[in-house]
Length: 553
Image (cartoon, rainbow, N blue to C red; front, side):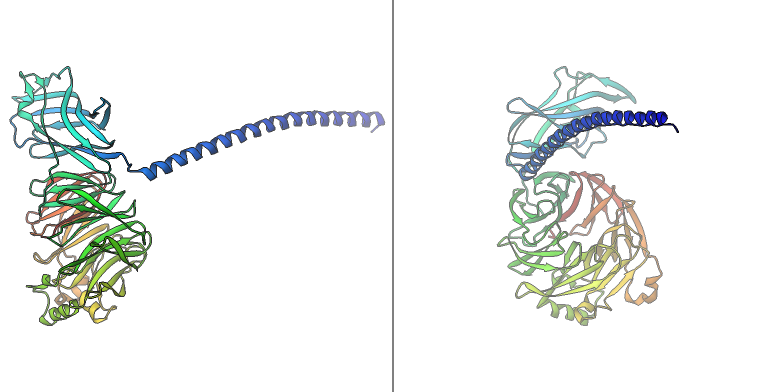
C-alpha cells in the first residue's frame, strides 16, 4: 500500500473516531439528562410510596376507627302474602343528619314476595362515621305483579322510595336495621308499587335459642334466633374474627371471640349484645381456635390456639388476663376440651371399670386437645384442676393433615378430621390416661378428603363429617371394638346431606335435633334436620363466616 493511501486511510479512521466521539458526547449528554430525570422520578416515587405507606399505616392503626361504627340492613319477608310481586332493587343508600347519602348496598337484587315469605335477606352492611341517620333511599329499577298467571308492570313513585329511620351509629359498634315488608299493602290503586316497610332495630334478648357466628370479612358476629331462623343482632368485634366459644356459667353468660387480625379476644355480653371488653393476646400471634372449660363450679378457663406462634394462651375470664402460655406443635388451629364428667352417665359404650377410671382421673385432671395442623399431631394438655395449671403435654402423631376434632366422652374417644387424607383418626382417651400413647391411635378409613369438621352423636350412634368440597355433611357409623379388622376395610357411610358453598364449621344444638353449618363460600348458615337429613333453612350472615357457637343449656 502507498504512503498516500495509508494517509487517506488513517485520516478516514480519525474522522470516524471524531464523529463517534461527538456522537458519544451527545449520547452521554442525553444519558445524563435521562439519569437526572430518572433520579427525579425515583425521588418522586420514593416520596409517593412513603406517603402512601404512611397513609396505609395510619389507616391500619385507626381501623376500625375511633369515630366509625357499622350499619347492617336486613329485609324480612312477609309471614304470608296474597300478592306475587317482583322488584329489582339496585341500591340502598342511607342519609345522615346533614343530608349526605352513603351507599349501603350496590349489588342488584331481584326480590319476590312469594320467595321471601318467612325468609330474611341481608341487603348490605357498611362502616359509617359516628352520628345520626334519618332516612333510607331504595333505588328500584322495575317492579311487576303476577295476576291470573300473567305479569303486569307496576309504576314507580316519582318521588322515589324512601324509608324514615332514626338511628345513631356509635364508634366500634354495630347497628342493625330490619325492614319488615308488608307485600299485600305495597300496591296502590292497582298499578303503583309503593312498598310498605316497618322498621325495627335489634332488641337485646338473652335466650338459650341464640346462635353466634363470626364473620371474618365483616369484623362482626351475627346473632341468630334459632327458633325464628333469623338474625336478630350484629355485634362489631376485632379484626378477622375466627374462633368463638360460650361460657358454661348460667350466672354470668359470656361469648368469647378470637380475633386473628387484631390479636385479641372480644368478650360479648349477650344480655345487651355488645362487646364488654377486649383481652389482648400478649404471648401469641394469630389466635384461631378457642374453647372454655370449667375446672370448678366457681372457675372457668379459656384456651386460645395461637396459629402464628405455635402456642396456646390460657386466660382467666374473671381477671381478663393470660395466666399461662403453653408451647404446642406447629400451626395450632383447633382446640377442644373434656366435658363435664356427668356426660358419661348412662353411657352404653364404656364398662364400669372404664367409667371409674375416667372419674378417678377427672378428680384431679382434665384434658385439652389441640390440633397442630403443620406438625401433623395432637397435643393433649393435661391440666391440674386444683392448681389450674399445666401438668404435662402429650403429643400424639396422626401423620396426616389434622384440621378439626371432636370429643365423644360417652365412648372416651377423640375424633380428628384430616383434611387431605381419607382417614378419620381416633384417639382413645383411656389409653392416654394409662400412658399408652402408641396404642391410643386408630382410624376409620375411606371417609373421603376435604373433611373440615367433625361432630360425634353418641345418642344416634353417628359421626357427622363436614366436607368443604363438594359442600356436604357425610354421616358415618363409628364401629365398636367388636368389629376388629372390619373397621379397616368397611366404608361406614350412612348418607350425605348437601349444604352451602365451602362450609367451614358446624355445631349441633343441645336438644340433638338440628345441625347448623357455616357456609363460608355463600355467606350463609344452613339449618339441617337430623331426622329427615335435609337442609330445611338457609340464614344469611356477614362476609366470610368462620366459626359458630351456642350456649350448651
